[in-house]
Image (cartoon, rainbow, N blue to C red; front, side, top):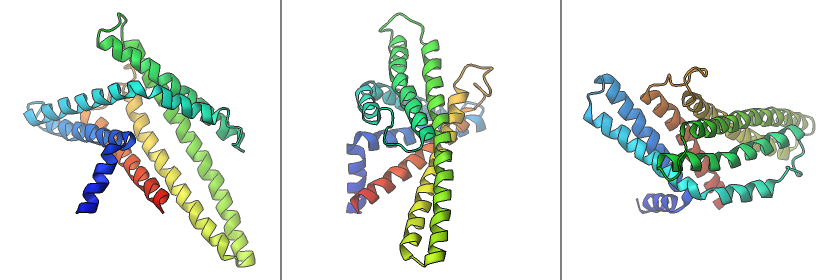
Amino acid sequence: MQDSLESVVNLLESYRGRDKVIRTLCYGSQLVGGVLSQKTGGSSQLGKRLLLFSAQLSHCRTVLRLFDDLSMAAYSQSYGLGSTEQDKVLRWMSVLINVADQLYYPCEHIAWAADAELIKVKSDKWWTLCTGLWGLSLLLGTLRSLRIILTLRRKAQKCRQAAQDDGREGAVTVTVDIQRQICGEFLNVLGSLADLSNAIHWMPPGFLWGGWFPHWLVGLMGTFSSLIGMLQMCSSDQTASV
């Protein structure tokens, strides 16, 4: 019990962990609130409160992201043009992802400031622009993960062949590690596709399925991707502590 409490406290004390928790609660509340509202035709008071709670948590995350520009810039600078990346396609995908992510933040800040009436501009176009940048980043991230999966599968095949030919146990260990990496990239694909479906929903009506999703479906997709993110974060933390 004490260990579980300490794990939760450690999770909430880190910015990354707290954001994951807030995101999961945000989409989870939207999922439950959307289901209750749809079942009662919008008359459920609990459903309305959960949707309002979800909106406030979303706003909270937007405000916290006002301080993410420098950390994103530091990451982009450290990666640069990906000179250490052997695969040129992966390199340029990563560079484009970093550019899209870097541009996302100032666009969102302007949209937020416009909604808060700090500046006199219309926020609609800026929200659309930052949603488009987010969607582009997710799409490129999905394609990047798929390419990594194909590369890892070819590598695993070579390792299995080497193990069969030479009977080397080390090759088997490497294959297991590769399979673990493939599972991680597959989870990235699932989470990115779930978020991408929401990003398209938030685009203007007429763009694919823009504006079609009910609250519960947005919440379902977001909760699914959030849980994947929580799982990956916990797995990486456990690996780092070993």
